[in-house]
Every structure is written in C-alpha cells, then in structure tokens.
Length: 117
Image (cartoon, rainbow, N blue to C red; front, side, top):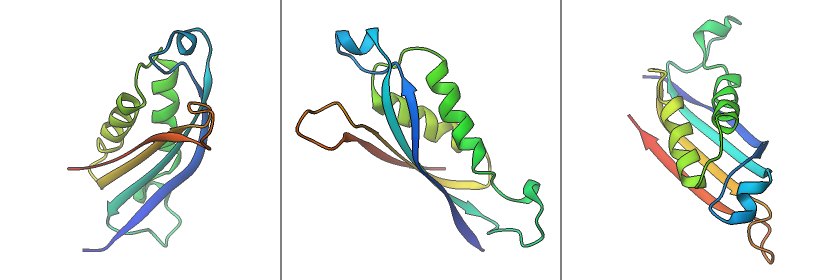
C-alpha cells in the first residue's frame, strides 16, 4: 500500500472560542495545523479528484468557527479531526490547535490530537 501526508500549517482563524467571560465577548486568533495520512499516495497525473485537496480541511475548520461559539479548543480539534476522517482515503488525522494570547508569558498554548479510523 502506498501512502502519503497532506498538511496545512499555521492556518490562522478568528474564532469565538473559550470558557472565560471575555472570550465570549470577542473573537481571538486561533492557529491550526492539520496533518492527514492518506492511502493511495499521490497522483502524478495532475488530477485533483484523485488526491486529498488540502483546501478541504481548511474549509472544515472555517465552517466550525463560523458555526458559533466553541467552549474548548479540544472540542474544535476533535470535530475537525472527525470531519477530516469522513473522507475514506484519510487513515489518520492529526490536529494541533493553539491560541497565541491565552497565557501572557507563553508564545502559545493549545492541544494536539491524533485520531485514526
């Protein structure tokens, strides 16, 4: 079996996310990395329908953010991984989500999850 990885790194979204009161009032930056391990490798024929289009997980992430307030970044990560696994060619989805402003003395804080079929 041949396989490969499709990834998106540093996707920046503006999200209503978090459990604190001020996080309910204002959107904040949310960064996302997505790595998908896929079967069938990659097409060399230039046929987009035969590969995983990396715009698809980006669209999933944007839809989740637009759907409304999200309490936990863990919930966002789980829902995004599940949406990515809806494509039967995706064997493993790793989602890393971080908020750059959550902890004053840290560059970022967040979660990383890996889910497989």
